[in-house]
Amino acid sequence: MADNGIKRRDFVGGGALLAGALAGGLGEAQVRTPSNAPAKKAPAGRILNYNENMEYRRLGKTGLMVSAVCLGGHWKRISTTGVKNITPFDSWDYLKAPGFFESRDKVMSHCIEVGINYVDAMAAVEVVAYGQLLKGRRDKFYLGYGWWAREPRIPEYRDPKRLMQAFDENLKQAGLDYVDVWRITLPMEGVPDLGELQRVEDAAIEGLTRAKKQGKARFTGVSTHNRVWLKALIEQYPEQIEVALFPYTANSKQLPTDSVFDSIKEYDVGVFGIKPFSDQAIFSGDSSLTSPTAEEDDRRARLTLRYILGNPGITAPIPGMVNTHQVDNAVLAVRERRTLDAKEKAELNDIGRGMWARLRPDHQWLRDWEYV
Image: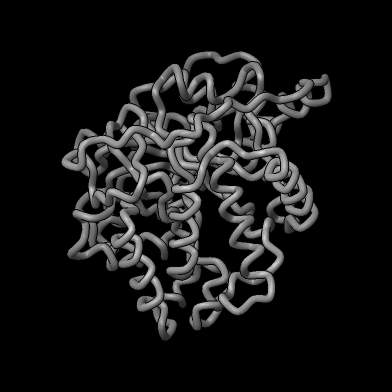
C-alpha cells in the first residue's frame, strides 16, 4: 500500500476530510450537464439480453454493456407483494417464506422481458436466492457478487487465505461456478489504525486478484460508503478496481474539485449507484400498488433515476425493485429525457429535503454522499 498521505490517514478517523472541506466552503457544487440524447446503442451482438427499447452503457474497462437501470439485490418492502416481511431483510428465513421465490422469479422474468441484464447481490441470502433463480438463465444476466459478512468488512476475513476459502464455500453454497463481478464490500465505519487499514486493503486486493486468475470472478471491484477511501483505492489499484459501487441519491452532487468522478474517468471505472431511493426515504407511501401516493411516488422514482442517469460518471443505478410495476416505471425513466427543466429541478430539491427529513437513524451516513 503506497502512502496516500492525508487521504488515506483521514479514513481512520471516519471521514473528517470531507466534513472539513464542506465546512471550509465548497461553494455551489457543479454536476456535469447531460445530453438529452440517449446513449448511442451498441450492436446487439455485444449485449447480453438485448432489447431494442432499453439503453445500454459500457461498464468502464470491463467492456460489459449493461442496461441503464439494473436490478439491486435488496428486496425491502417485499411485504407489499404478499410475501411476509421478515426482519432483518437479509434473514435466511426469506428462503422458506411462502411466495418469496415466486415473487423474485416474477421480477427477474420481467427484467428479462424489458432488457435489464445485471443483478447485484451483496448479502448471503441474496447471493443464495439469486444463485438459484439464475439457473437456466445465466445467458440473460450478469451477476454482481458480494457477501459482506464474509469479506474484509469483518476482521476475521482480513486475511487472503481465509477470504478465498470463504469465497469458494460461498460459491458452492449458492450453486455458482463463477461471478461476473466480485465487488468486495469494505468496512462502513472507520478503521482503528493504519495497520488495520492496510490489512483490509491487502486482503481485498489479493483476494480479487486470485479470484480473477482462477476464473471465478470475471471482473473485480469494491463497494464502499467512504468517498475519500474509494478515490484512493481507484488510483492505487487500477487493475483490481474495475467496478465501484457507492451511494448516489436524489441530492448527490459532483464536487467541483477533487471529485471521485475525476478518478473514475481517468481510470475508466464502471459505476453502479446504490441507494438511489435513499432507503425508500424519497417516498411518501409504502411501495404497494394500492398506496394513495403510488402515482406520486412513481414520479419521484422516475425523476430521481433521470437525475442520476444524467451524470455520465454513473453507469447505472441499481434500485431494489419488488414488483413488475416498479420495473416498468424504471424502464420508463430510462426512456424519458435526461435534462430536468426548472419545475423538475425544484421538485427534485423538494424530494431531497424530504428525503433527509425521513432518513432513518441507521442511514444517516447517506448524508456523507451529498457531495461526491
